[in-house]
Length: 352
Ligand SMILES: [Zn+2]
Image (cartoon, rainbow, N blue to C red; front, side, top):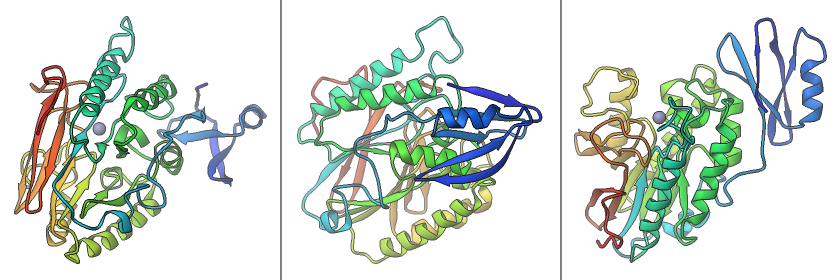
């Protein structure tokens, strides 16, 4: 399924075929790639680093319900702009199938993440009243696009989430493991194909929710045009947010703007200080109340003026002192409140 081309082989042209990009590569070893492309009509080629090229075939597995056309089905503006009553939703991050035993090949690769995710889903399914949705803020699976277990992990993720109550929509947010640390157009298109739009807005119970792809802020060197589109779109959403038509405005993204405070130095775990203050000011001026994130595998966060950045630990592998869990967010007319729930310590019936 996966081959790694090195050295002299190079990508020479890109052609668009139906909704998918196929990169027509001309290897110096004549015939190698064209033959493969003929055998697998949806071969994707990804320039993963300057020295190596990975490519793989698409599978037909994809979420049956996902964000499209800039919104989430059922949560369009006309369906969700009006405030009715308090409600809650679930926010999780980093189930990251495959991370716990990444360095231990003797173990069965991602059984533990599947167990934790299944248990979280069970707890969420039992909640009364039902949460309006379950948003997973990125890093759904561990292997980057083009890596060995990627396809199998995605397949398991999609299968496990079939157990989520069909009245609780799964909203996916794009993380760095979805489109790679240095995304290229094909990794983003591949993500969209399987998990839906990588950025969109939706409306639920009188609240406006904006989903961002934080990789455009982290590293857009290979996807400059897409990043520009994302930014332009975001400005439009923030203009709408500013209109005052909504009880609250909430953002979901993978990498947080900061871990503890807005003035902290640049780290792999936060977004560049060069644009951080500018963006936080933009959000704050647009009346965004909270930004929910993941990526760090521990609970953290803080305030920038009255804007809260909430970092939620992982459903899967932990890198701090927290236990695997998810966050229950209660939305009331005048406030948002949230509580982190440890999956293995939670009572069977979560009452709020
Ligand atoms: Zn991440």
